[in-house]
Length: 441
Image (cartoon, rainbow, N blue to C red; front, side, top):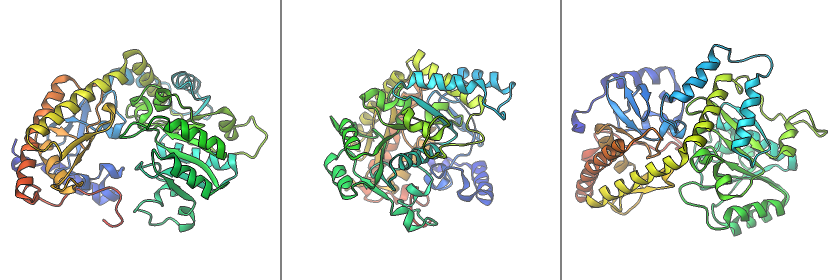
């Protein structure tokens, strides 16, 4: 389909309705229509497996997988069966449900490096609870976060460090300091500079590059030597790296870790896990000051916990992590071959672990370009590929990936034309897509 003929009139009207009632037109900034070419932000009707349909009737192969949360594919039958079993039994009670016991047992069996777990609804609550717990345990005020990882929480301790810091007091932001990924010497210098002040080191244990040899173990040693808490944000790495997360794959045990995204296959559930002596500070079986750890009305909804248990069983029994890697490797190889074949192999670049692929769109000087990203996304959408990233779900099949590669090749042909013209503007048909974190709209 030619992009000039690819119109989304119903989606366009729905987006106008969304913006009239919902700030930003979406409940997650990464889902905003500013992340898509102008007037080409589809509004979804439904999804099944690796495919979604918009309200204009178009079908897409979906990558990004619900912002990495739907790793088994949409409406996965095993997950839905577990959810339906609980729906008729009630979702929320004045006392804990037996499902909470079963879900905790299942989680701790899947992530054996953790000793206790507490469930919540979103990742931000879990990471902020980890930070609060670290501050309480150490009596220290500062948080040291990895500067190379893009997101940790909607809460002030993190958002104050981004360009969208409006409304956050400087005094709060000043308590957050940053260290570079992979650089133990710089991290030690930071801990020495703020000797006795840093409560925790928080980072994604891996992201678009593998951790350098000895890096995570080195962080473990630094945290122990400087008396701070080591926190792994496993929102993305959890399940996609291994069923037990990156900590299970690399064999380095954090004091606390947080999980979400893939844990519920789209259902709202996250987890804070870790050492029992730390976690129990938020419980009733210790003698110190009480920590208000996590207390969420909906954190233990029975059907979401049932979904999480079904996800964990499916991963373990069906080897889902290995399948994600195999699918990602096939996709990455195909995209790289297509880009090279069209002469843009240095400009359309696939990066990351096979189970968590992203792509970069580079200009003639090989610098990241929102204009070239816009051109690329327009061609993908017209070809039936919805891909803010190339993060795979296990519901994809070889035919889906082959089609995706064909569409990428067509997009790369246009990309080559734009590079030769030294101007992508004629192929944008509107304003370029924009980064999420920016100070003004």
